[in-house]
Image (cartoon, rainbow, N blue to C red; front, side, top):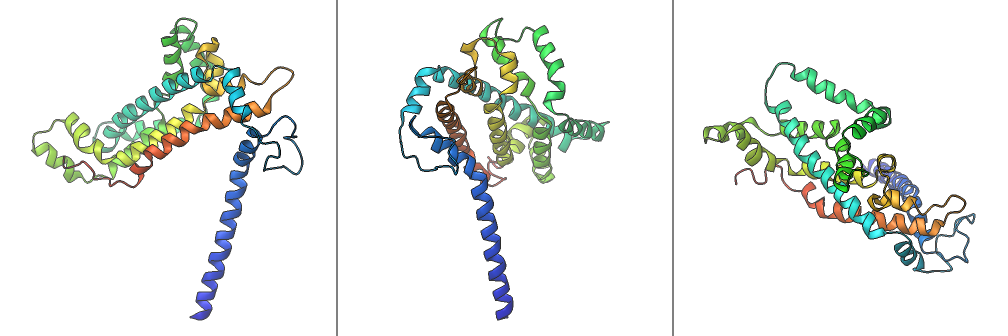
Length: 284
């Protein structure tokens, strides 16, 4: 027994050691980014080995990036796009996942597998036709700002991953809940909205977090569609700090750190739903 216990302790020690090392390797780029954003001009940010603790500590890079670009304007643009994308994904993914999980209709399996197949197609492969459709529909910022926001949001308004996630969440709910609601006189929409949807709040939170992170960090599509600097989102605006012949990497690092703060706040705000019960609100 002592030998088995010793083996378990040794295995646990090496497992935790490997996990800690992998975590440090994963976090190191972010730590280096923070360190770069706090270094003054007198310090070499490309020194080898890297100097993590700044010797020329300064907050001037954060105030500098705030003054050099319209940071608050970029922030509000990103908030509008991210909020619209998250809201549409939650509504459309839930409405698509519900019939795929709880209803029977002809071609159900084919439809579901066809949706899943789109996961294998990267956005870059369909970007050109999507761009041409966006231009034809005049959903670009050259028409007006509202059209520009719609053009940024609509290509990402729903995803196959979101539909799959919500379908799996609805499949995990006992059918007795739905049957009891129907006996009480609920319509199909009332069953969906008042009974089943409150029970999948954890899955909705997961989808909201993934969608927000993806939308907030999206760079390629906004950089192609947007033409007005006033419509830039944060990733495009921060990239604007990079000049043609020179780049202030300290400002870029500071801007990148400021850009991650809303993601952390959103994750912390939604985190409590991960541990909430799936049956929360089902009897309300």
